Length: 254
Image 1 (cartoon, rainbow, N blue to C red):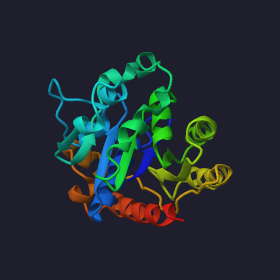
Image 2: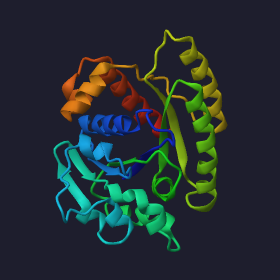
Image 3: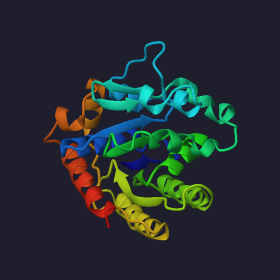
């Protein structure tokens, strides 16, 4: 099972949307995919129509040792997922024992033969949840908007990735950076893309050639809690994410 973390400490960059679309793209090719929502906001869990009934184990239960990963899997309307809960917001206070960075990796090891891919959606913060995701994954993908604040945020994230490599996951790769809500006609988008290329090179990674264009169909699909591929298969977003998934699949094996 190849585990991929979708990560950015900055909110509003399309992180959960990208996590959902990448996983759905893999599923369309016949792969078995598990999603894990580590974001207390639970956007991915909402999109996938999870059950929030009392007694249902969540990602926090897995991290705290109250449930196994197998017990926490929901076979939801849009696929298999270990859902988030609002209580994840207190994870930095709750998870204090030695080895807390390895909780997720150890939990997911038991599922290795069941899935081809595991997609981790992370919170917009550099705390214990994000470190767990980076420790558990084979590599990460960074969604970023084509603006200067996103460029700065990716640079800061580089430091966290280097620290995790040093102490927790020496084999951690940065598969690539993907630009979201992109407008080719905007001068600033092109300027930031050029600088993001340099940042990706510094991280020994790449800026994906595929850009995810701004598209109203994304928000409409979210409102309907549907995959972009099912809701609007001919939309720019569907085409862009399909191209991105193919690019990820091709370059990930290099």
